[in-house]
Image (cartoon, rainbow, N blue to C red):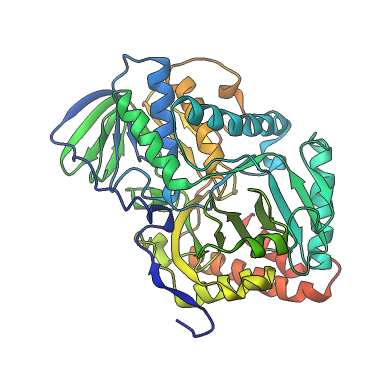
Length: 458
């Protein structure tokens, strides 16, 4: 690692994520041992699978629901994300159409639903609803920020839900020219939420078969090396790991995101930057960042590293390349020069699922029993809860407000074959980096960024 990046004496790279640092990575539970019959088999024990199992068992306690997980519950993005329980729509208002307003409201409602479940089920995940601040640090970013608020107004998002604020009103970010604030975001500790949900689901009588990779999903069947689960419904809840399943390599792109976390920072730092509460922090750069103030006064800071590996490969252990750690540290200390006296305690990476049109979907086919939810494009902490409740209603055959939301049953074309996939993604992010650099001296969004959007359909 470069000498420019101060690492703590106990620095760790990978090992799933920092969020397991205190508790330790959980020992996986028992494998599936032979063939099994169930009403619902859920593949993947991340947030989507856990929420779906939770709501199904709460609605119909007699249902035989099983979870199949290749590692342990919370191993993937659910145990590695930035801890943003955000109301941001997991896709485009324009692509979701007129009903996007209703879906946006359901996203806001989902935040409070997660809070209510955590209180009811005694899940302690450092949850604080402190809202989210987005800052603009160049004139072009400031123009985009104002445009985004104006666009939100056109889609029915009013002042109490999102508004412009002074650039130093809540968090003093170096070089900030403009800022917005929304109350619709809460901080969580991701691994604590995943492990808490897993505990509750098990208490409800749902077995989680860990160390049980699913090699094939077919109508009414989930095939593993240790037995086949036959079920009325088989639900795919594999998000960024979907590309590993037979026939689904081009379904969703496994996009990489990386994080670093500092050692705890002193009260003088928080006083200097004005970050007094648990607000989440983002920006309007194309190569964007995201951050939280953790419960023990660290900064957890994330962004894009190596965005995509050829052939949709996945580095499952979370190791982060040196240049990514250096880039994240450089950006963190540019945002907060007072953090330069700190050191990095942990770095890690994970993958999220990206559909070809960058909009999430949820679906259940009554004829085959096959269903899925995912493609959250980085907004999965909240969206998985909405997905779990929607899958519950679809599986039970109930027509509700949730089953008529615009993401239900959407058809999305697959990503291009290699090498076009790799070239497209890497070209996109190279153009975004170049656009961010150029926009330091430009009043409006660089044409390079618009070209990158055109290439990938962002």
